[in-house]
Length: 454
Ligand SMILES: NC(=O)C1=CN([C@@H]2O[C@H](COP(=O)(O)OP(=O)(O)OC[C@H]3O[C@@H](n4cnc5c(N)ncnc54)[C@H](O)[C@@H]3O)[C@@H](O)[C@H]2O)C=CC1
Ligand code: BAL
Image (cartoon, rainbow, N blue to C red; front, side):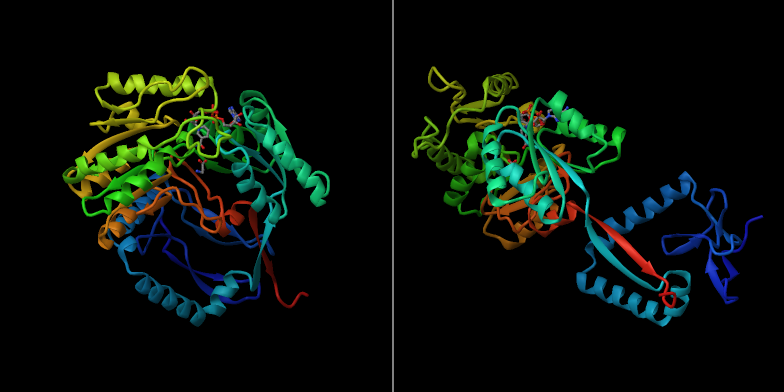
């Protein structure tokens, strides 16, 4: 026989309280379908009461209630109204504080503590910047770090290591190692002495690191993974600006950026004009020696990336996209690839879905902003996105609706160390930069003190 929701219980001081023992779903106390769970008074070892537990069906009900409310109401409720409700709840808690305090502890505070030894694994595309994005918040919050550079670009970090010594850091605070991913990287991410892994690289490797974390010691994780970011060019945009920004958005660092705007969606009515401006911008690219100050585009990082990119260019042609510009090796020596533009791309083509990580952009058209949002979100990735428009409503609608961790408006690839960066969906989780990064490298301890005993 099921017990009533409200039970009268006695505290160890003999005080009588009425407590709920049912589940709270959709603002109602409802009986749970799991077994009853006894609440034990740890001071007396006596049963205070039994509470209902949730079966899988109850969990489904609670998730469904939260999902419905999130979609249809709470997400759209004005922050001011949310504030009023939260304030009202606070007033009610204050009114009933004695009762709540009896059921809880009395004096309570939190401490943000370092995690201990942080492991970091970085890629080759920004060999100094990616490590620094991890080192700075890790050290500032009191952690020590073991950082594995990419086996392809170890050198800058060893120069950095010299500066660590010169600056006077105690030995052991910063440790930098190099090695292959499947050996050194895998060992580091499985190491029981490491409390957290911070990783930037491919989504495939990110999921391996998640497995290593799960099977070793449940390390806290921060994963900054791949991307296939969309740049949406609306008909009302300043097209000259859009062409310049979208160009940098894809071709900066030869396309070797996780946030590269490698899909460009152009509103049908301005397609020809945009292509004229964008192509003119692309043709200005000076390819050559990376040490020459006029060079915009140097070689790709290595033969394997070079081959991979050329293979994607072949795939794009085979899939029926129009090769509008470039598409070949540049020169005869070095891993140079011509800046390459595909047009008439279909959203399910591999060049629209997969991270190429090279100077290759896939362009398609759209009729309405709603359609552009749908195409942009049709990706397993969600790192970044952009919209070019002169309409504030459009800018706000697109930035609200894009499933991406960063949205640029009338610009692209703009970074600032005070604003956080990180992905949605399979672009990973956790934030780098800004104060959010500090949270990634700390754990919060709650201290509750029973007053009177001290
Ligand atoms: N989103 C981003 O920032 C990056 C994305 N990529 C994508 O990944 C593709 C392949 O490039 P890769 O250099 O092979 O990327 P990757 O993700 O395999 O390598 C990045 C880092 O992870 C390490 N690593 C590899 N396997 C590991 C494992 N099993 N356990 C622990 N660490 C491991 C590597 O040694 C390197 O330090 C690129 O074409 C590009 O599409 C690559 C680099 C950065
Ligand atoms: N563009 C900076 C972040 C990255 O590509 O990894």
